[in-house]
Amino acid sequence: MLADWFKQKNPSLVGVDIGTQEVKAVLLTEAPEGYRLEGVAKVPLAKGAVVEREIRDPEAVAAAMRSIKEQLPKGAKFGAASVSGSTVMTKVIHMDSGLSEEELEAQIEIEADSLIPYPLDDVNIDFEPIHTNEETKKVDILLAACRSDNVDARVEALEAAGLQSRVIDVEGYALGRSYKLLAEQLPNAGVGKVVAVVDLGSSMTTFALVADGETVFIREQAFGGEQFTQAIQSYYGMSFDEAERAKIAGELPRNYVFEVLTPFQTQFLQQVRRTFQIFSNSTPYEQVDCLLLCGGSSRIEGLASMLSGELGIPSYIADPFAGRLIASDTLRQQVGDDITSYMVACGLALRSFEPWHI
Image 1 (cartoon, rainbow, N blue to C red):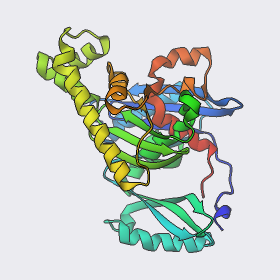
Image 2 (tube, rainbow, N blue to C red):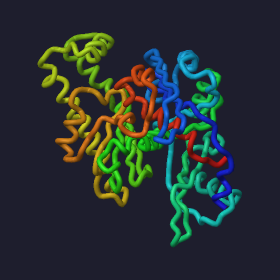
Image 3 (cartoon, rainbow, N blue to C red):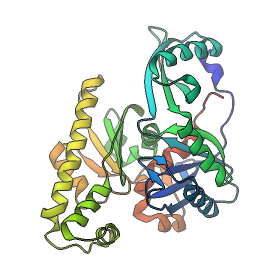
């Protein structure tokens, strides 16, 4: 039976988010009030080491991972990372809830063979039950598949830091899981609402739509803060590094709002609206009720207020410290407002407290 899958308590996992510009890591423990931040680390990556979430320079990533490990509590032994992009396929399939684990695995393999456009020897496949319909006696199974070389690259990155890999997740679902830390930031803790968690990274925007605490839709778009930097670079004749520094330091000409910022905001709004339209057309949910914006580029001036005004829904910068995340004064000071960029890493670390089938 499905209940037989869950037999082992998970170890504490370091959630490791390997992004385009940096590697971020989080270690959490459970606390009566929520979850306690025990360790946090961030290390920049050389440009080109990771391109659109594909590891192109394993040695550079390994070096960053070793530096990450040095910043974490010494007892950290296990890690979780994530894959994303076009090499990841997910699909919800429906199975009889009375199947044994062996029967289910055999049926999953048949389904996977018909769904995946690669030889099964070249992919890693996993599945997880997400909902049981007591009336039909059917269980919804999330089937996920990814090219093995992408999975192996994450495993090797974790091992380079002396972390044993326990979970390689899908980035969109890790982002959706971070909603556990954020829900109480919303009015009435978001009860009964469909919430969009939107991670605006340097080169990728990841969407996780959450209903009743369950991630019901994910999507990625090749759009991020680098487009804003490139616009600054082009408009003002700067190098990329000069434009990035000026953006971070707020040392741009006063008229940049009209020349660069507003066009970028408009482009981002179009990405959000397009994703919401696809969501409403492909799921039973007609609308999104509120939005939580996170990621390294989420603090680009005016984004949250612009989204609130243009979409007509409350939009907030995600702040787990206003939710269920607790930390010492030292760690809170260390991470500061940048905590919003750690949501994928937090979602991966939260796998420590969820059962999985071994």
